[in-house]
Length: 102
Image (tube, rainbow, N blue to C red):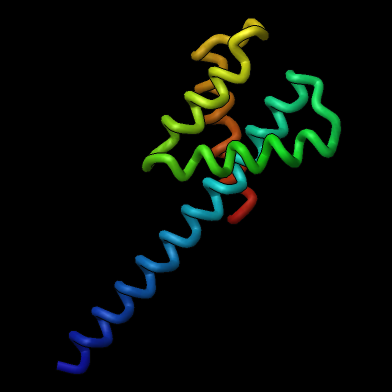
């Protein structure tokens, strides 16, 4: 019975670790996205920090990336950036964020 409990605890630890890692990757991706959008919008360093916070807040609206996508799409609506370009950049920066934690 103790080996079963050990296995159970091991799986729980792995799950917690994986969830924490996914959270960190998502947060890093959102930071990179906010930096990318800030450059397009011509924000200075202080405005970029504020914008990063607004992207982080947007990410807590619902599970997944759709909330962040909607915010960025709205913020870039007057800057000729397509939905496809936004989604491609999100994918690219997600991979970059993943590689930061390898």
